[in-house]
Image 1 (cartoon, one colour):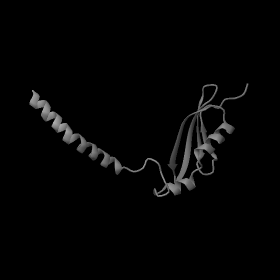
Image 2 (cartoon, one colour):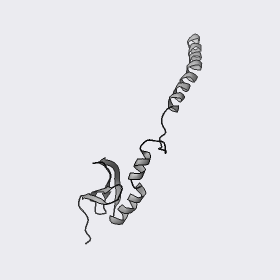
Image 3 (tube, rainbow, N blue to C red):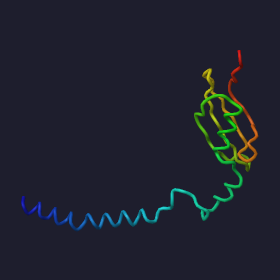
Image 4 (spheres, rainbow, N blue to C red):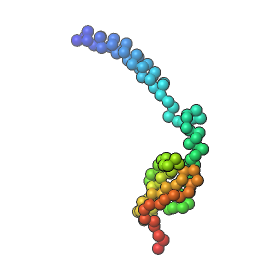
Length: 115
């Protein structure tokens, strides 16, 4: 039993550093999680899409409610922001914005009316 523990300790002493270096080496080759100027397509997308902060400001001006979900999708060679908004009356609106011009393309759902 003592021999088994010694073998295990020796194996751990040899294998653990080797396994650690393999893992560190693999993670060293992963791409960065954040885009930079060298990532293909980043500059093109940056030129074609208004920043999300501006979208939030526009939604707040035009509608009252809480943004539940935001998606950026490419449709028919143009970028579309799809916003799901919960209104104070409990309705959910789906609002599509052109991601470059910020024009409202479509509103689905029941709009709330003032009493």
